[in-house]
Structures are given as C-alpha cells and as structure tokens.
Length: 483
Length: 106
Image 1 (cartoon, rainbow over the protein chains, first blue to last red):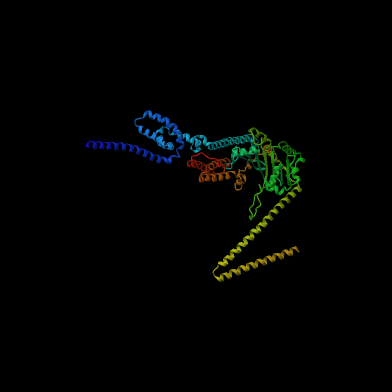
Image 2 (tube, one colour):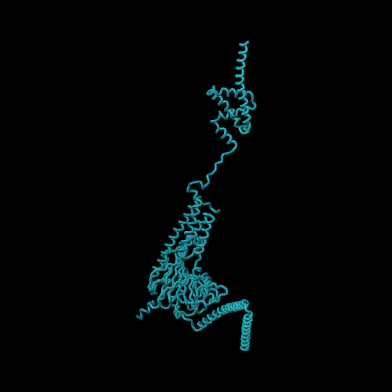
C-alpha cells in the first residue's frame, strides 16, 4: 500500500512537472498567440513585406536550422506548430519572428517597397546654401559694369583733355598775335597770361583773351561731348552729335553800330529765334535763304533789315561762309544781346535786361563725335573769320535811313516792354494799396478805445474822399486836353 | 611805333580781367544731370538700406558715379563724396545683413 502510494505521488509529481512544461508550451503558445494579437495591428502595414518575406523565410530557416538548432529548437517547433495550426494566418503570425531573423535585411524590403510607392525626386540645393562663386553672377556683373564705367571715365577725360590741348596749340599763335592777354581765370592779382585753358568741367574748357582794338574781350568755350560719361557715350551711338567751339566777342560801345544779324544752319536759326531775346524781338521774319548772296542752301539769314545783310555779306565773308559751311552752326551779331529769354514769374515787375554789343560764333568740330586732335587744325581758318568779323563790325556803319529804322525799332521794343511792365506795376501798386487798407481796417477793429476808433475811421474816410477828388480832377484835365 | 600800332592790333592798356559768368541762372540752364543723379542716388540708397533691397543699393552706386562724372568743377566735392559714401554703405549693409547672392527684381 505504502509503496503504491509513494509511486502515485511520484507519478503525480512527474505529471505536474510535465504538465507544467506543457503548460509552458501552452503558455508560450498563448503568449505567442497574444503576441500575434498584439502584432495584429501591423497586419495591414506589413502585408507586402509578408508576401515577400515567406520567400526569405525558407532560406533563413534553413540557415538557422543549421547554425542554431539547440537554442532555438523550441522556437522552431513552435513556428512549425503555428504554421500547421494556423495556415490561414500564417503570414501574419510568422511576422514577429521574421522581424527578428531579418535584422540584417531591413533595408531591402523597405527600398523595394518605396520604389513601388514613391519615385525618388532629386531636389536641387538652394542657391544660397551653395558655396560656389557662380551663384553671385549678378554681383560680378555689377562690379564689371562699374569697372567699365570707371575705365570709360578715364579714357574719355584723357581724350577731351588731348583735344583741348591740340586746339590750343593750333590757335595759340594766332591768338597771341591778336591779344595781349591770352588765358585768364580771374584769380591772379595781376593781369598776366596764364597761357593755358581754364578747365570748367571734364568736357568744357574756357579761354579768355583780352587787350585788342575794338573789343573788350573774347571768351572761347570748347564744349566737347561728355566722353567721360558712359551713358552719354551710349546715347550718342543712337544720335551722333558734334563737339562745339563757342566764341563770344564783347565789343566796345563805340566800335559797333546798332543792328541785329544772324546767319547759320536753318535748324540753328529757328532755335535761336525762339530762345534769344534780341533775335525774337528784332528779327521777326523767318530765316531767309542766302542763295542771293552766293551762300550754300544749308545756310540761312536772319536780319533786322536788308541793309545790314547787304553790308555784312561782302566777298570775304561769303568766301568764309561758303568754304566752311559744314563747320558753321551759327554766327550772331547784335548790339542788343542779353542772352536767352528768361522765364519770368508772374507778378514780378520786369526790368529791361542789360544789353551788350556782342558777336557770337558757334562752330562744329569736324568728325561728328569721332574727333581726333589733328581735326583741330581745320578750325584755324574759322578763327581767322572771327578776327575779320571783329574788324568788319568796327568798320561797318549804317547809313542815315538804316540808323533811323534801327532807332525806331529799339524805341518800339522799349515801349512794348514798358507797357507790359506798366500793367504789371499797376497791378503791384493796386495790391499794395489794398493791403494797406486792410491793415488800417484791422487796426481800427483792434482798437479798444471807441473814441480812437471813431477818429481813425474819420481819418480814413477823409483820405478816401481826397483821392476821389484828385481822380475827378485828373479826368477833367484829360477831357479838357482831348478837347 | 606808328607802323607797329597799325599792324599790331594788341592793346595792353585795354586789358580786361576775366569775370566768371554769374552762376545764378547758369547751373539750372546748363545741365541738371548731376543734381538729379545725386538725388536719385540718395533715394535709392535709402530704399536699399530700409527695405533691404540689394539691387537698390547697386543702382545707388551707379547713380553716384554718374553724378560724379557729370559734375561741374565749381560744385562742392563734399556733397559728391557724401552721396558716394552713402551708396557704398547701403551695398555693404545689405550684404552684411543677408549674404545671399542677389536675386534680380524681375
């Protein structure tokens, strides 16, 4: 009996142990099943991977079978159980173990899946994150432009300077033989010739000559093109313009008679007639052709009266004008020269502008922009023309009729001028009177003392009455005179 | 002596000194380019500094260069230098604040 009981206990103990083992198996099975359920949420995600992974499952299992039989025997058995038991859900259930085994193969399934889903797009690195010089191409352009501008400035400045010097060298002898003072900038204490041009700008050079019979002085202005400014250079490529030499001779009052006369290209004369005060007042007719006097068609004449034209167009002058017509822009002799018309503001009383007896010459340098220093020699005969004109202006005198006409013209112009200013002056006086009245009224109003107010008012009334009486007297006088 | 005075037109006793023409109306008549360019340069450099626009600052540099090239010798160099320095500072400040390359304004 006792032996039987002991055997039963032993059996029981052994059975429980074995059951426990099986329980473990069961538990593990359960655990695995729970694990499967835990991983159930990943079913959808990893379906594709699972479809491919079974292919790999076989291979790796074989490998692992070879390498790790003892350690993972249970796992293999369990896997096998699961595969037998749940073939339908085999893929999903084998997934967690697939993950463990496929540690080294993670990338391959992922990349293959991504190839199917998202095509790879290569994005350009933004320019500001690049470190190459090429991204700064605009800045390089700007700096190059600036350098080009500076280069052009230096080249243009030098060219203008060379042209000016060439002109002066050509003309120096002629000028020094005609004038005592050649070159003066007005700053020296003594009147000595500087013997060089006065640079006003990078493209404008002045020269003052003085000390000659007939004239007070001669101002020569070399107005070159703005070669130092690149914008100007580019603009000139569209529209060619010439360098110009402007000469202004100021005559003595006794050495020139009273007339206004101009000759030059038609375009220049039309412009001068509009701009210049004296030409617009005294030469009201359109520029006439100079063919009558033998001038080429390109030149026209503006004159105060026919006698002046007759007197001016002598053989030598005609010779000069014909031979150098291409270089002459305009020649303007006037005793009433006051410069261009000044735009007056309204309400300002005009003053008769100061006039000076002047001879003005504007010459174009040959080459129309593409000038070389040797072209300056071509202008020397024109300077001879200037000297000749000075002497001629001194010699030429109007006859009696001409003088009368000229005086009439000047008187007419002055009268017109005074009329204009008279009206304006009247208006100015009127406004002043009104202001005074207003000021008086204000004073009366502001006056606190009533007595004083009354007195001021009476005084104002009396003043007004007196004015009225005066006006009436004037009107009566005018009527009497008219009668 | 008499023959000399006949042939020689020069008269040393009649020498007049050079008087520069009154500059009241002349600068306006002559050429307003340097003044306009100066003003434009200042406006562009202020725009470039305030609005941090690089192209404004570069245009300001160009304007101040053009103004300098067209300037009259009687003009104040201080004004010219100040506008030039302002435009250069506008460019430098734009790049210090934002070292990226310039994008064209179009």
